Image (tube, rainbow, N blue to C red; front, side):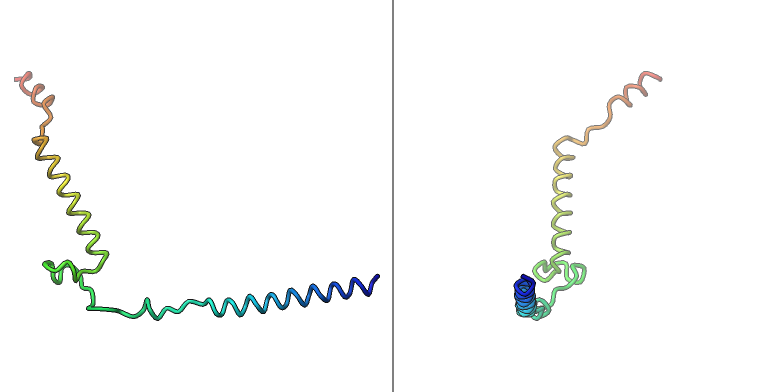
Length: 99
């Protein structure tokens, strides 16, 4: 009985060690290579203030920030234009009544 348990324990240990070796070889094969992300393709991107008339050459984050701020300005300007920039009429009524 003890011999059978020892054999099964040895077999389990061999299987687990072979699995660990298999996992370590797979991990080494799956390691990512950063060569593609480190290489630059095409012309270098520049800051938007260096050439404001060429958005195709701007850095991506500068393009996004300026595009979003431009849309915000357009929407806010349109809101102010179409609402006529309405003033607070209650303050005017209070001032007229006090004279």
